[in-house]
Image (cartoon, rainbow, N blue to C red; front, top):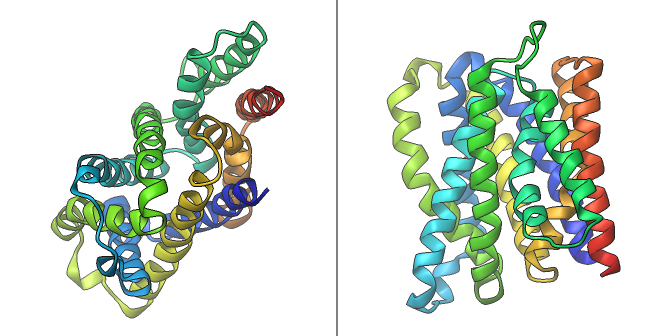
Length: 275
């Protein structure tokens, strides 16, 4: 129960933070918002957790480096996606990464239904129809974030048991080494007002510091496949956050697509729990 509750709380915080971050795009762009999210989160967790006081085995370093790199790329790509398409749709595409990997590795007949629903939802979100208004680049960036999210789960599980929440602090520090130079190179210094910096801290806390810590707590208590499948409500939560905070309205077909992905994740989670 603690692991599942941590995942759900993580999703609520993350999508609230994503909606706040999107309000920063007109001023500092998606790269600037990513810089704030990752770098300030790293500073906050390094100060609060002080992970250097608990040395870890160097054998964990390769997995930790990949984990940090995936954090960076996942944040960069999904914010590039959010800049072009609604956050509910971007999240719906992103979540298919860990979901499809788990489903493709299954051999149970009923899991083919969940796989069909997930693929159907993804296809409905692609700009395959003449009346589609979705930006193709936004979809492509979300697909890239999906791959990074899957790898984030895999490598996070390798270090969660040994490092706990320290892994998040170290991972974000590594990720900031990637996102900070990109943000500095793209953001106009004159835009860095007190209000923007304050909002950057809000984004950092709610989008990364709290969610990633909660996810690491969950990864210590539940296996990676179950963790990935418990994310079933992520697209719906993101879509609602986009609607209430940003005024992003989805079409009926897009809601059907998100419903298919949510159903696939929820169905897989149910059968996984029964097994």
